[in-house]
Length: 362
Image (cartoon, rainbow, N blue to C red):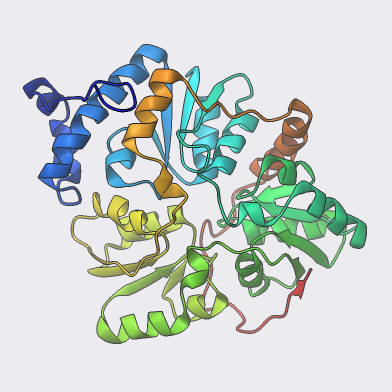
């Protein structure tokens, strides 16, 4: 018997047959030795999901055996939450971090939302609280607050409208027009705010929150990579510093990066984001070589096949959101969802972006 109370799962001929199609997809990214340990868990997780009417939401930063092996819905955080809301599943397992599980609960209040590890947090989400937002609103009365979805429920609840990295420019400009103002508060990611400011005439007031994965990239890193691999396309996430975007070839959300690679089919590509993103896109982008100067997210990597299995078996680590907070947070998210799609979806125009635009830091 294993230390956690579960009998070890064996790599039987039946498990091998059940997981063969999945193995064919990931075999370039998972070793055969790893697969013999992972496949029994994958087979059992997928069986229990059917038995319990559960679905697994796998974020783009999950490792390939999770993303491709057990994920029912895969993608970015808001996309996953929206898919969960449309699903008739009774249980949602959030293979991601805690604020994502909260967003899923906000959009699916009648479903049970479980997270495999309660310690799976986020440096950006933890940089700001609902109380901070209330103080900001008191300091800037009459200025609308746009909040990135990568935030906790109590922060969303104090927000006028949410945004994603894909639609932040559109949301900021819509809110400024609707409110009749020339300034908008965009929190909490400082670099996203600075990159949005380069795309719009709306003045941006920003918070000094940062993602510990993306803030570590520097422009010189990109220049060195481009010198070493002159034919490679560099795709950067807008949570990176503006200087990184300036020397990249494309900037956009994780979904936009995925779409770019699959549609453009570059011979070589460098994704300036979390490590597992490249592994997951590479499964389908078979003709593209991925160069991998990535940073690991220690919070995302707390999620494993083992603790997903335990969450399903024990139905443990349920995520709750106070109904009053959830109602207000849901309104901010829904206001964003109700906006028409942006004219140029999920990307930043690096050609038209202004290089140096000041933002007011709170």
